[in-house]
Image 1 (cartoon, rainbow, N blue to C red):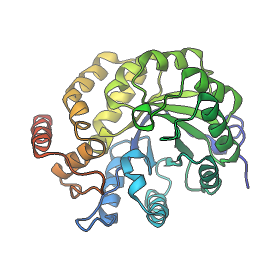
Image 2: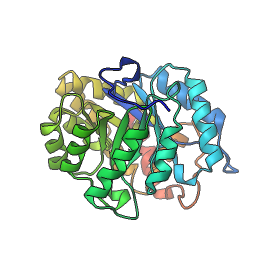
Image 3: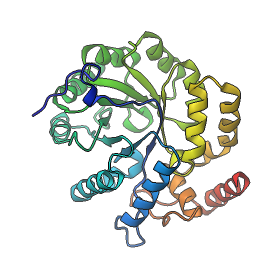
Image 4: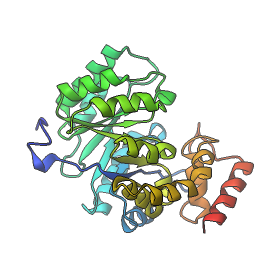
Length: 305
């Protein structure tokens, strides 16, 4: 096994996370099977409109509802279809450390540039448990590791101290996708981190203000539908053109909240269906948005066109 060491001394293993990554949905047909034709269209749409990298099999992909065979096939399909046009990050997380380590060891570094690994959910580990969990993954992964803190889903928050400790102890841990909603915590990480560690927004609605504090970009949900506009907002903010970036940010503020009213990815799938990209299909226990939400999303979409 090729143990990953330090991305900043091994340029072949480095991934540039500056800008906008998109957390890809998984399109389904009416019979609930994976719609690979729709996925291909979505991948081309993302790349054509300036996405900086793509995230496969994250939360937005409904990964827990996919079989192991489907996950394997989706990874291979995306890698083949993208063909190196943009970097790829693959989701690799769970609440059994041994299983996640085995999965991380099998990541093909010729296809994927990093893994995104969520804080263990349901069993609510202590901060030391979280540290040991990620340490084991970092030692096993052949590619850089992006931490993912989303306590609203996992039931436990990874503190700034634990994040900074992991970043300091493991050069292979290169970034965190922060979706805690706690700006003070995110700012604390940004203030005390090294230059080799990046903070990425995990929430579209706070991407603009978080970049002004020092974040390097976003792993976006809304970018599935509006990659060109949201990538432009992100780049303008990173370049310091805050007035222009703020104008784009404010265009989408109504959508930010609407997309999560009935859960993610129900909102963005509703939006993509209204745009003609996919069927409005999810797998249980997730269900499509309510009709009232769908109508509100349509109304906002019409106002943006």
